[in-house]
Length: 357
Image (cartoon, rainbow, N blue to C red):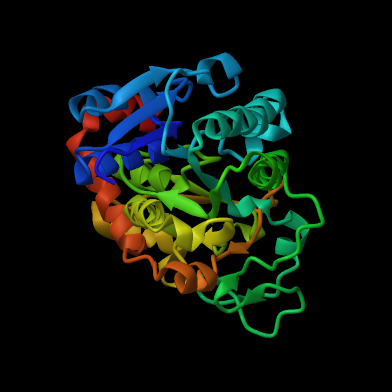
């Protein structure tokens, strides 16, 4: 595998650019091509880094089939292009979410079929229905909600959410587009011989993420502390006890790297991939960690009412993916906060207009 070619869609985004750069650094002989529409503010900042690393950039949009009609083949396609916000599909951006996350996947799958490329799809934990996640039994402790064993809903334990969690209720337009994409990927395998692996990722975080309230909250939290701006706890009593696990972008790279080079091991599988219980954190705990790392304490306001589509707790159960691949995350929340802080500090003037807006 000295001369393989890899297309990364969403290649200037947080996930896509990191994966492209790390693949090229580790495997200089590989041809890495990054395709992106540069819609998200800050994605253009990655262009000089990609060029300097010897990564080819294509200014294209997966919504447009013509942009993917290339006279070249790829060995692998990593589909990291998405509108990643759960909230985006609840308003005027409905058509953009559907066209990007579903139509875009279909167009990319057609390219994979033409190229005979292996397809690595970055899906989401948001395929799991909101009402079931709301009904999970949890205990309230001093700083967070915790998951006990003895749950009524299948696929839930103290380790988190597993792949057999039920899928038969509403999950958000965003989550529905990703689940529909998963179903179509299997159809493309059956009828067009597209081999694939699907990773249902939870929160992904780390350097180079342009964090916002609705997506990229860990970067947003670090940025708020860095520039001394208050944070807000929304819903669930306004105490900041809701919990997510967080996957360091470097750990996601380790997983994708393993899948590329051991593809027969993961072919045809759909697996949860997240930080897991060891890398889980409540908003209240995240505030404390950010204060310690940055040296800045900020205020935290409370909004009692729950936001539509929000959930009290999500932790990834990585049991299956660890059994299949041997992969397990090596980094925790403090590592994510520290690495993000160092990135902001190093690029303060460039990032301030974006992250401190």
